[in-house]
Figure 1 (cartoon, rainbow, N blue to C red):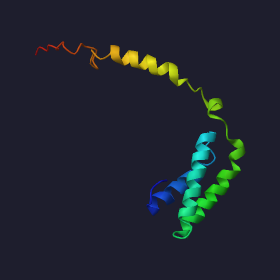
Figure 2: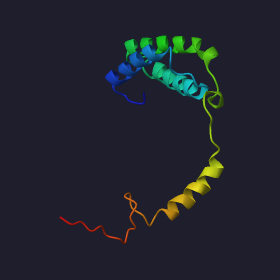
Figure 3: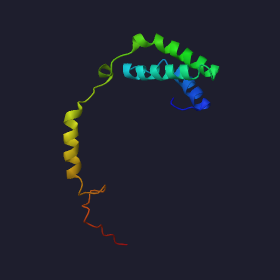
Figure 4: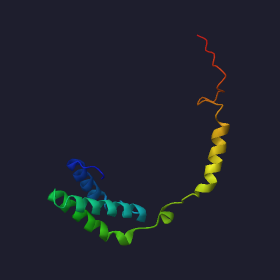
Length: 113
């Protein structure tokens, strides 16, 4: 939606219009979409009237769905970030000596044919 390409913007607006019954459901996604659609409306107002009309149409339909939006915490569990960063750092430092196959880096596999 940040593109200046006419075809990409038109296609995104058409796809989003079709997906409107199921997307977005989360308030933060709704807010981001609304902000970008309003940017398209103002940017294309004097250049591409067909894109401006598509964007305004989608914006109107999106506004009607505002009452159905839910908070992200009600949609799924959001883990706390402070506890996971220390655990991840400790885990990654202990795994530095192994490769993806589980062998130590200094060990070499011996293959016989």
